[in-house]
Image (cartoon, rainbow, N blue to C red; front, side, top):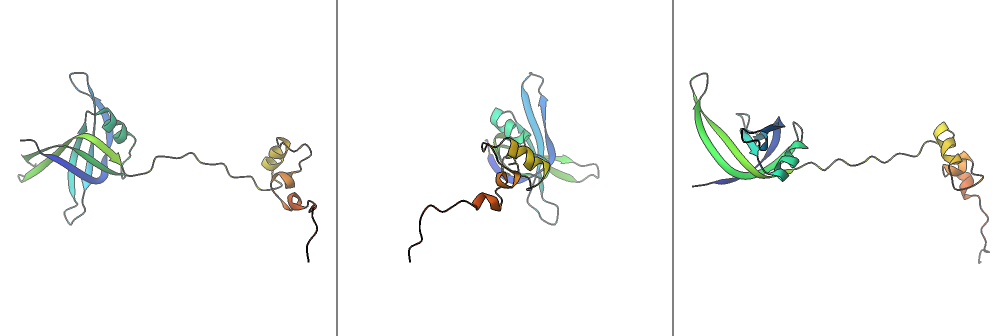
Length: 150
C-alpha cells in the first residue's frame, strides 16, 4: 500500500542537492510542520523531481513551503532509549509559499544632487535644468493656451 501526504510548514534544515549512487540528482531538506508544545513534527523531504528540486533549492531556512508526495513512516530507537517516529516524504511537487524575488526599481535622485544633474544631462530636453528633469516647480510654469470661461 502506498500513502500520499501533503504537508505545509517551514524549512528547518536548508535544502541541499546531492547525487545518488546511481548518479541521479536529488534534493533533501527538513520541514517543520505544525507548532505545538512538543515543537511540531519534523519531516525529511527527498525530491527526485526536477521541478520539486528547483522549487526547494530556491528556498532558505525559515521560508514557508508545501510539499506533496509518497509517505514513509518508520520507528527508531533514539539515543536515550525511547522509540521515535521518522517521517519521510518523497516529494514529487513542492511549492514555496514566498513570492519570487523582484527586481528593485531605482528611485529618482533628489533635486540638486549630482545624480539629478547627471540625469538632466541625459534628458531628452535639450536645455533641461536639474529642477526640470527632477519634475520640480519650473516644470509646471508653462502658459495655458486657452482663456478661462466665466
